Image (cartoon, rainbow, N blue to C red; front, top):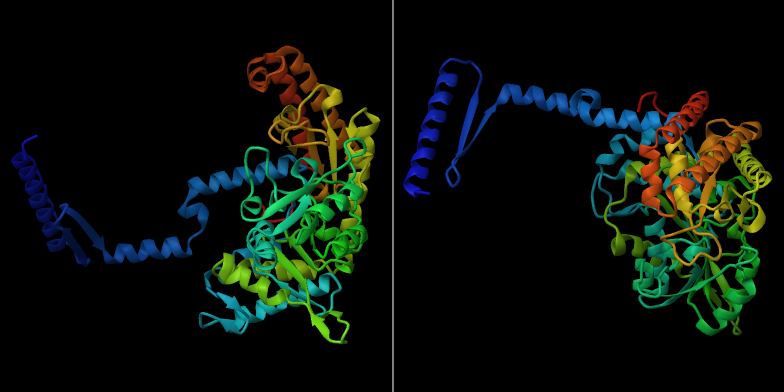
Length: 518
């Protein structure tokens, strides 16, 4: 292309824009600014009065006015939550006070550092809020401030765990956690034969402990044997999909035998622990981490508790003190994070206050009652439950005796508006092709479902899984073909839609906390 022609074209465009601007300025009382960027012949025309009006609208307007396209999607998600049965064990519906904290002015403030030790000014009230969150966190678990400290700044549970390892274990130190296929969490050091999956297995040396493949229960004897060989710096007593209470005293014994620190990850069960309806890890553990959005029903955030004070007395009678506080706090910031999320810390504070109320205790009791009713209902219909039952908020269903995979079970339930997740069961060879589904009751219990309501939920699950078996007979073993049948087979589509309609009508009969439309 002729460069002279191109330059001539842009000169002509420039002349026309300048002429147009002059006409607008001469014929208008509004103040206009035209700025020419000479390098690329781009012009910015700014009407100051109009800009002020638009800026005010975007700053102070409502989302449904300023961005209706996005708001429509949010409304759809709200409708999905209200119309479906939420049975993902790690999810819950938080309270309006928590949502109000999360959308407050606290979002605007930077406050790197700890209370009264900030790297920014203007944190007088932020300090008050964080100290309140710390105090209430201790109160929620009946802890004394002289014995326990707490950091409420972790963005979630995974960063909280990584901060503990960074501060206490140090790079390439040894950790032991429940294997992911056996019910552990990614951040407990998961790796495969060919790849280190989690950063916790990349930067630290991890050795998993396992469950007994027949009972589904943690093999504590094998854990003790492995720990004597591996000599971990830290042992993690924590789960992501394990339906029984942990034997913290046995963990403590194994840790002491090997000079290891004992950390509990109570992310899934922290609400149950706060309510006192299951054994507490605080009795024997050195460090306890948690998220705050699962059974605790707070914001999406993390908390680290650590022991303080006298750890032991040596032969000379000298006191040996716990040294976790500075190591953990410095690992959180500046080690791994920047400024804390102050809106989330405020939400932690109000969630911890709720956790001390009698209504919260009754809620947690009902969570367990509902989980146990769900478990018994599924067993009565022939479904196999890992460990044979549940002590907590979740149930792990083995789909192998029904001829289904976890992926197919998850998919058919989702199509019928029941949300759960596929999950490995004891004996599975691959986390990518699991044989089970994990079901939880915290969210349904928040909506007010009781045992008799759970009976109906069990019936819906059973209908959906039987429909999945019917689809499998048509599709064969491949998931892609299974999904194809659900879309293309008219008879199957009708059955799915009919069941979905029944479930959504039933679900909408229960209230959902939060804002009405979003």
